[in-house]
Length: 66
Image 1 (cartoon, rainbow, N blue to C red):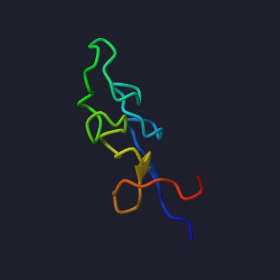
Image 2 (image 1 turned 180 degrees about the horizontal axis):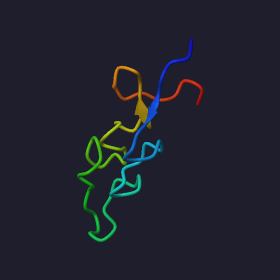
Image 3 (image 1 turned 90 degrees about the vertical axis):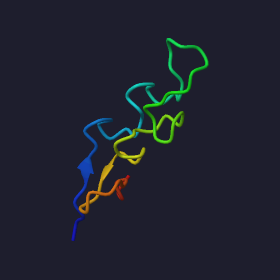
């Protein structure tokens, strides 16, 4: 039986923060930590917590086949 998996609509399954593109720092403000990441400055998508998607229960999870 195959588990259902939904790709994160914010990062398109990459797990990277859209604001800093996974860098953890803001490009226009030198030395400033990105506050859009989860946790701040990690470079991970705040929606899926860097996992790339969601399981059937709606919790952040990565694909098992990846």
